[in-house]
Length: 129
Image (cartoon, rainbow, N blue to C red; front, top):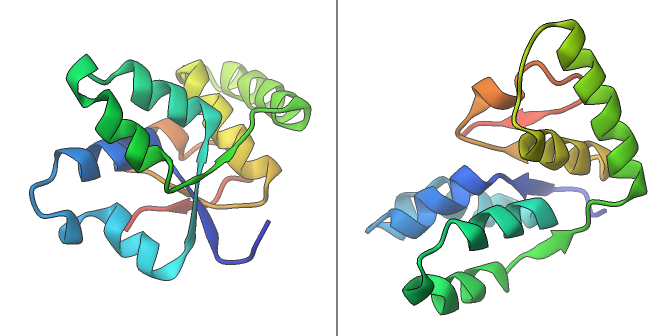
């Protein structure tokens, strides 16, 4: 992966999509500094949460990103993360674990508005602004 890249979490896409002032969103600001990636899991979440009348607009937004597959290496990392979170008695949505594992496997930080979901995941660098 290119240096200077960042994986974008679904909540960052949603914030941008809903904002009337796109140039004030985290996504807009990150795009000025980084190469932007999303996980295939984020693609899924974003598409599933979209009303049918917005599907074309969402596809256009998603076309602007390089999409990272949830592959075998990501699956292995996700299983380690899940085991760690179970030991700590922390529950995290499995899709968030998959997104984090994808970022870790590609050696990229993750930009999210939901740090609570990701802060305890070892090896994951977060970008929150």
